[in-house]
Image 1 (cartoon, rainbow, N blue to C red):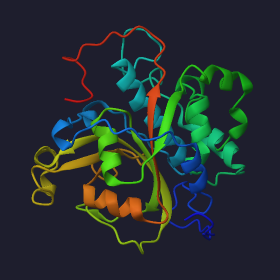
Image 2 (image 1 turned 90 degrees about the vertical axis):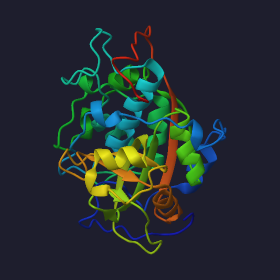
Image 3 (image 1 turned 120 degrees about the horizontal axis):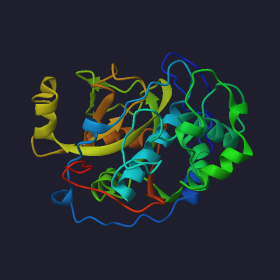
Image 4 (image 1 turned 90 degrees about the horizontal axis):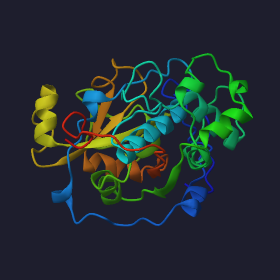
Length: 304
C-alpha cells in the first residue's frame, strides 16, 4: 500500500519482484484512463496462445520483471501485427532469437529506473518507463543467467525505440482485467506474492489477503473458457465451470512449471490477488509494429 514499508526478504519464493519497493502512487499517476470497450463476457474470444508461445526459463537470475515485460511486448506485437516476425523475413515465431524481445534488456533497464544494484529484482513501476521508451529485440541482447547490466549501451537504447508501447492502464478491478484481455487491447503485467495457491498445480481459484511469500512477476497473455480448459488440462475437471472465463498467464520458470509453463486464474482468484496489498497490475497496449502486415488467420491465430 502507498506509504507502507515492507521489509525485503529474499526468501525461497522471491524470483525478482520487489514488493518492498513498488511505487503504487506513481503507477496510478502515470496511468492512461481506462476505456471500457466491452459489453460483457459474451464478446470475449478464446486464445490459443499455449499452442505457439515460447515459454522462457529465467534460471537463477532474479529477472522475472524483465521476462514479464518482454512477454507483454511479444503479445502486444502479435496483436498489432498479426504475427511475431521482428526481423521481417517472412518467417514468423523463429526459435533462434530473431522473433523475440530481450528479457535481460527489460530487467536491467527496469533496475536502472529503480536505482537497484546487483541481481536484486525490480518493480512493475520500474518497467513502465522502459516499455514506453522502447524494448530491444533479443537478438541484440540475448538472455544469460550471468548478471551483467553493463551489457546495455546507448546504442541499444536507441535501437529499442523502434518497439514501444503507446500506453498502459492500471488495472484495479477484475472486470477491467478480463475486459482488457477480452477486447484484445494487450496483455497484463503484474507482480504478486509467490508462490500462488495453485489447485492441481496450475489453477488459482482464490487467495487469502493474509498470504505472504516472495515476489514474482508474470504476464497474462490470453483467456480460455472453462470447458476448453478442462479438456486441455484433464486434472482440472470439476475445478471450474464450463461457462466461466479463465485467464492464461505465461511464467518464466520453464515448461516444467505449472502446466507446460502456463498457469490459469479464475475471476475469483484474480479478484483476490488484485486485492492483495503486495499486488501491482497494469495492462499494456498499442505496441509499435513498424512493418507491412502480412497475416493469414487460418495459419496463425491469437484468438482462435
